[in-house]
Image (cartoon, rainbow, N blue to C red; front, top):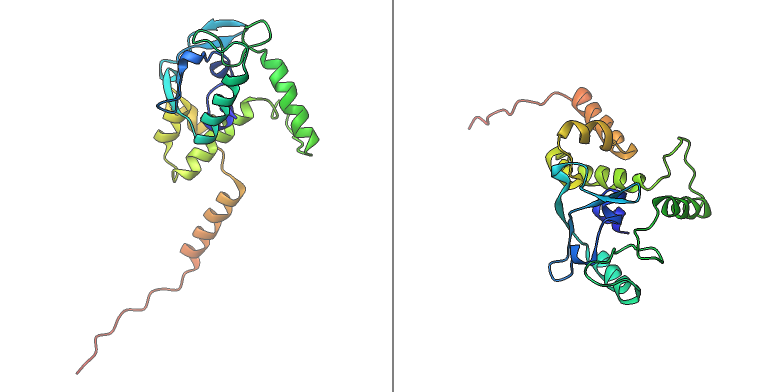
Length: 184
């Protein structure tokens, strides 16, 4: 839920500590990431950012904190049984099993990984914002619009259909009839 509703990278989610979760402001503060099991800085300077939490995510994290063994400010939000960050391979396997269970199959290798949630988030923000590339770039924490456009913004089939229909109307629209003035 955190990956799908925030568009953050898997390593950024795994690097979240309870101190980074601001329940009063309903936001997550992305300050570090986990890469190969080690704490590091996020990928780019633009990746250090605040991310708003939807009410559903806020409630889910409140529930998670209530039942979590490691729930102190300096503990990882997504901690393993030893208190270390969760292993992304285990998370990926869980996602892939869930997708298979509900009958979703992917034709491309690696398309069913956790990064799928980041791609979906970026594509939906782009579409819902009316194609605002800057907004999408900031949402994803990219350092350039080029990366956002080339890698993350995917045209959805119905969006392509709308574009085709718009083009057809523009090309085949009947010419406008001039308005005649009435002679009194």
